[in-house]
Length: 70
Image (cartoon, rainbow, N blue to C red; front, side, top):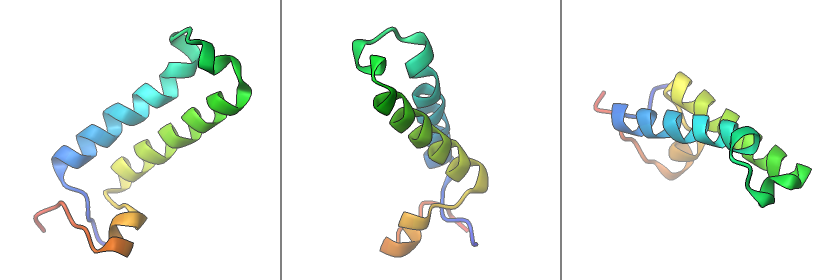
């Protein structure tokens, strides 16, 4: 796996991932009364944080996108 995420992309993914992980538990929004919405939010958050940590996005590789300089 070669890195295909740049620094700004990684920071954005990390922030979005943390927000998605925290939203069901601290927001109090009615949408998160459903366990399905909570599970989708948590899974999406985990994926965002994981891709940020690994510096690799499988979808970027499929589409030939690369935001890192190296």
